[in-house]
Amino acid sequence: MIPRYSRPEMVSIWEPATKFRIWYEIEAHACDAMADLGVIPRENAEAVWKAKDVEFDVARIDEIEAVTKHDVIAFLTHLAEHVGAEEARFVHQGMTSSDVLDTCFNVQLVRASDILIKDLEGLLAALKRRAYEHKDTVRIGRSHGIHAEPTTMGLTFARFYAEMDRNLSRMRDARAEIATGAISGAVGTFANIDPRVEEHVCDKLGLVPEPISTQVIPRDRHAAFFATLGVIASSIENVAIEIRHMQRTEVLEGAEFFSMGQKGSSAMPHKKNPVLTENLTGLARMVRSAVIPAMENVALWHERDISHSSVERMIGPDATITLDFALVRLTGVIDKMLVFPENMLENMNKFPGLVMSQRVLLALTQAGVSREDAYTYVQRNALKVWEHRTDFKEELLNDADVRKALSAEEIEEKFDLGYHTKHVDTIFARVFGE
Image (cartoon, rainbow, N blue to C red):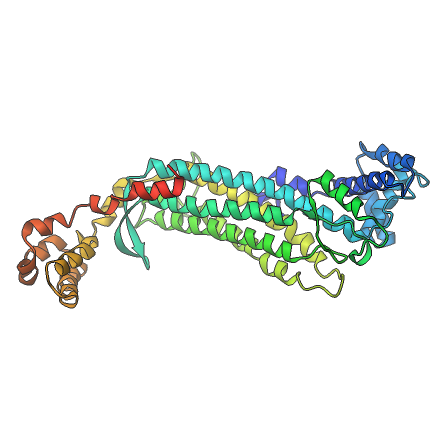
């Protein structure tokens, strides 16, 4: 992943030095378990722990791999250089490379999950704060991009909060599903290694044993994991698109914070562009691009092939690093986002009173007018407002058919904004549980 869209804590999970440290811990814990079972001498298991403070030489491992063409063998050779060939002769006893690779990959995904869960919790806190801040800030709701009926900015933030709260649950579930390990040997039968070794290693690494593996951990788990990342990315884009719309010059109901010294365009000094949310839209596309390859990794030949390996070497770091960056960036956007209530009211009144058409329609039907006739009366007056920017209420007051059914007072009452916000507290209680 490129540094521009990376944060150090997540990047460190995927660094070669971290990977080799996890490999070492898998092998060392496996030796402990085998010594407990009397399979290997205790002194050999203890000798492996002599390397516990070693910083494994990535360049040296790469040098060995250039000859062996096998990354795990290269690592084991390097480990023996630190522990001693005789002392290390029982390392990897009865194990296969996938025992190390798959268990390590899942440890990395669990650690990445913990960061992403923390990111989501931070985003939820920001959305909740802004939702309560603007609970009663009225703005126009839109369907098909067209003015519909009044809502509030607080409800917009609350809607995004609820979506991200679902994503938090999904991320926790994905973490639980991916937190398995396998130390089951060739083709997963435990023929050459006791299942209790797997139980011990998994316990030490915070995993649970895979109920049944082949020579690899089943990839439906990983497909579900990356699908979850893709859903979260889509939710990020959902929020970003709303903010991008709000920042359009002819809308300007909200905007990204524009810092002192920031420049919007190399050519036009007046520009304030929604660069952060546009960037989030692009990052969401990249995270989602990992989903299909992860799905395709589920189907492997027999007990093992490595067609999934090259895919995961890329999508593991790229998807988690990108999503981590995007979640933190979106949290910053929400925290600092500018909201313009006056512009919201001005936009809503561009076609005066038009957004109250449904209230008038319902009032006419309740007054005894057929729905078909009521719709005709309301629509013909609404079209005058569309075409001539007249006042919808005045048009209704001057419509003889409407006045036969509704008094001036009854028409006036249908233009009360409070009617549309009377259940905001109920919705907030559902979303925030307060």
